[in-house]
Image (tube, rainbow, N blue to C red):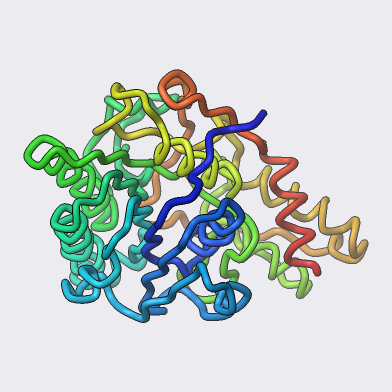
Length: 326
């Protein structure tokens, strides 16, 4: 199914050297866009954007969303902002709530103000499934959220509030995408705050036992990077006025336990290296701030944006594993 694409535009991708941001930059360059990447390389990597640096349609600004001057430079003559820059990770926010707040709230406000002042037409931003907090409702529906369980969740909810108010007050066309456990090519397997899928892939490839937090019964709606790219294109190009000012779950609408996803990774990797099947899966304590169960309703995205997930877990994992293995 062919979806509407951002074409022939000048697009700013904040956090463009990160996992999601660099995938967006790569995709945008295929459709005759001029891409501006703003990144301070705190969690992004130059290696992610090296292939684009020689492209005359790609412009890198080595800057920080916490600096209003960098934000002003980045939005010059821009049609669309895809705001991905943030300090992710619930554990990181518990370790250092002040920096998470500074980047995710002050930085967000800086780029919003700069975009408003530059007359940017459409502002799409990465929101988060962590906003559902202690709500036990499943599937997660956009208008029913609970109380946040971490500083990170607070910051991402505040982003939604600011975006809504900027739409109301200044007529900005904002759309938030609540990402659910995104995984795929270029996701960093290293570091204290690495996401579970790339971390476990790397551990299995090294014959190290992955440690699941808790008994493995917690569930997640694992979302392949190509689904996220599709949602950014749809949100940035939609003519449906009912979608403006809204937030949308960005997921696939399927629920998998942590144990199941770990066993799938092991099984698929063993097709490359049979010895991986012998690696033992271990269990540790539950992690503070973790939501027990996560499952998105994607009905709103389907109805208002025409979203149709291109990759469910099996297909997405297989593509991811071949990228890590090669």
